Length: 318
Ligand code: BDR
Ligand code: CA
Image 1: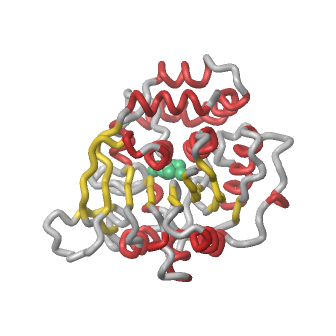
Image 2: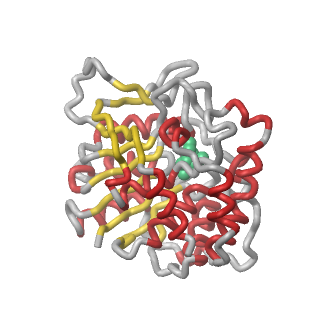
């Protein structure tokens, strides 16, 4: 079985990404590490347990990670994901945080990977703080990974959080910088604009959430109501996705980790993160001229098998 660690800031799309992974019979999730991001860490922990509960998978270990970025000011995406990070439809019987593991996220990642060297794929769909801390604690950690999949960054100048910045990178630019600099394992990146280019039509979303009468589909339908309304509201009409549909960003990185054949075109390039620009802090820069002389290059996803992806999404809610 393919061994995965998921690093999440469970908002709506992280929730769906976790469900994708849980639905794959050929995957073993070694653990889920949580980090600040869409919502404060306490909510992320709670939300992650809620997703596991809906899927009857509360036996998967969940770890508490960093509650703050390395240096940046903390920010959340409550506007889109809700105050609780999951669309503000609380579950009165949500599992208690006493189910969390004692070990902290970065230490847990290091331990899991040490136990299975070169076998573990890490999927990061959140600010990269936990990953940055892990490599600081153990510089040999990245080389023991089989692969790393990241949802984050943008290479054209359109952000979703700042003028030029995508949320996961903007929420902790220093962490993103460290990860792109020091993770030498094969690294695949689903950028903001890549996910936008592959967003899902509203009619497909209705089919996926409303036509299936399962607890998982009902859960996804409820928690995504707020962000779907947002995506269709006037204020979002300047987004790249405007008019095209729903962008469940994190699912692209996760799906690619499950089935690499979904990625039909990649660009292998050296990448870094802008740390100082007035408008561009947190933006991913691509070093086409190779002026940075980086030894390690990342694979930036360019094209995706959308039909196969949609099938995976539908199946994950069955
Ligand atoms: C990313 O930021 C969060 O809002 C989403 O969960 C996704 O990981 C998109 O920019
Ligand atoms: Ca996320």
